[in-house]
Image 1: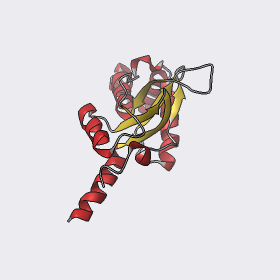
Image 2 (image 1 turned 30 degrees about the horizontal axis):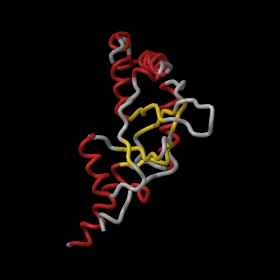
Image 3 (image 1 turned 180 degrees about the vertical axis):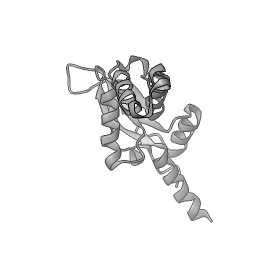
Image 4 (image 1 turned 135 degrees about the vertical axis):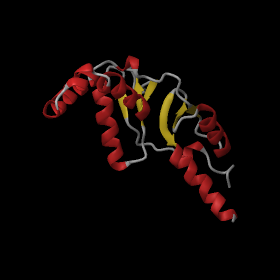
Length: 165
């Protein structure tokens, strides 16, 4: 069964994305909106502006990159260390506003794991293990078709495993 399943079969066509000119705040909004219907989603694709209908993949911002940004520019804010409890929420909100209205350049993952729609499940699994990411983009002829999440891969593998015992 593993060789019958393809990236195409597992991919999610409804994926979160933002334009390359977006801020980190827009990434957080897109991710939260996406997680309303796909709680397992942990990535937002960043697409380059293009003259035609096809938008080129520029990179991605994962949940890990968002959390790193929070750690770097919010939790390490010196004002938070000296803020009284009553001031903490206001200071935290200010630090978040400053942090999330920055450019995506510092947070962008340009080395995106890419699959072809026809890649069989073992190829998909190997890419996930080699890249150590929880997601991969399905692309054909430069066009993004969808995203495969690690939960999708696990679901397919576990289904075959349970059937074997």
